[in-house]
Length: 216
Image (cartoon, rainbow, N blue to C red; front, top):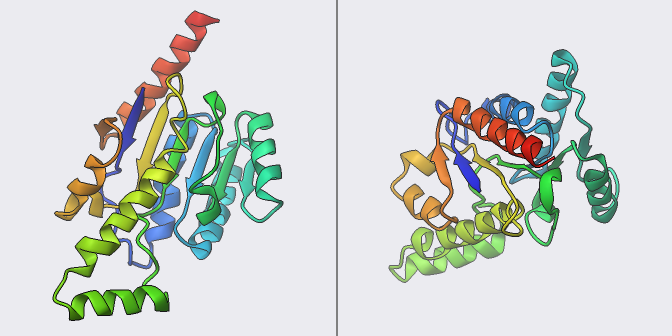
């Protein structure tokens, strides 16, 4: 029903070229899914950068998928356009991680730029972390990681809304594989098939298209 794809050879999420790398590895997935994708970013700055990079890439590669951006109009209007178009790519941030329901083929890929840890410059979060650490507790494992897991599950939940939904969840963040806590994160997700090979993603979408043709 669904596949989890973590691309190979991504830079560290705090490196300067990370967002450009996200846009680059997202492109072949968007081509394979024929649009029909959410690209969910963990910051507004990354969202705007990914949108600009995808816009340039779509133009240079002749990819004619409608490209929508959070903030262009209300969330309700954007979702309505996304559903009606049937092959659009919507780049969004926090407000599209939860409470969004697009059933069926209009949404076939959810691409997440990085693990959604709460922003470290949030003063309330910083105070909570300091307090937990001062008490000798592990704020990362007890608070920050569970927060990221819950938020990620909400984002992943945009993809599979009922038993007939199919699609690919792509998480670009290499920490899912490289860090010991990454296992905890992906084990919290539904039991998707897992791959690091874009060819398997492309084959997954080819199989879906063939199934659809047989049913037509």
